[in-house]
Amino acid sequence: MALGMSVENLNLWYGDHQALHDITLGAPEGKVTALIGPSGCGKSTLLRCLNRMNDRVQGCRVEGRILLGEEDVTDCDVYSLRRRVGMVFQRPNPFPLSIYDNVTYGMRRQGRNKRSELDEVVERTLTEVGLWDEVRDKLSESGLALSGGQAQRLCIARAMAMDPDVILMDEPTSALDPISTGMVEELVTKISGTHTVVIVTHNMQQATRVSDMTAFFYLGELVEYAPTAQLFSAPREKRTEDYLTGRFG
Ligand SMILES: Nc1ncnc2c1ncn2[C@@H]1O[C@H](COP(=O)(O)OP(=O)(O)OP(=O)(O)O)[C@@H](O)[C@H]1O
Image 1 (cartoon, rainbow, N blue to C red):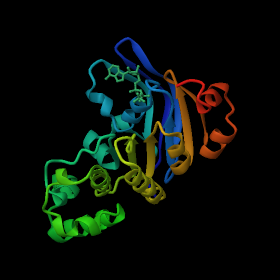
Image 2: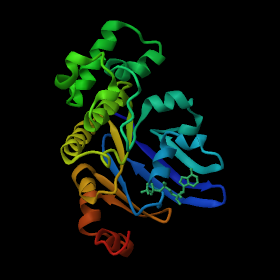
Image 3: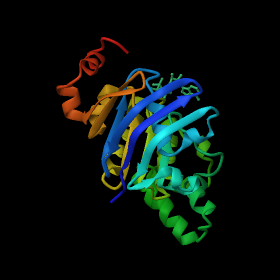
């Protein structure tokens, strides 16, 4: 079973601006946790903390604990952390390499070059993301030649090839058409169980379709965190209800 993630008393500043205020939240193992809230409330900032993508942001300061299982991510080597906590971005970003090399990129960087192992992972992960039949005859063609939806599934396969515990997704369908969106949503459901997923979404229906838990953020604060069905049907906080009913945001 994949490890879960959690943050404890997390505060984050960009220079003088505090973007996250005392966030405590767990993304349970093998479940999908959705982060929702109006633009600028800190969803992506929190997501980026989980695999230390904010390390590279100048002037960014983080306090509090960020845990993968029981291990503090600040104690991890950042490259091994990103192998265990993969990320899928809003815009599909295949590397300018063949489809095959996109999937095997991380493994090769680890020095895993055995052809039979690479072949097995390519077929297994592309099958898992529903791309194998579409691309099996053109694995040596560029990943850049794929459609947006195919490219996003390739990026998910690339993340899964490293056998991560956690996959972070930052609005992974906002640049996709409805059919591709449906495919990616099905994929999220499929990979949970064996992976822990944390997904940022602006789409409320998407959160209800794919997630087990939902966290609602407002102005850098975690307002409410609950099982998705409960948060959407009977929010405890007035601010959550106002947001869900479209009164702001
Ligand atoms: N690199 C950065 N440098 C300075 N401020 C930043 C940086 N990234 C984000 N911020 C600020 O931090 C706050 C939270 O931004 P963040 O992108 O996490 O919000 P979000 O909820 O993901 O928004 P959106 O839904 O629009 O993507 C905002 O006030 C934003 O302007």
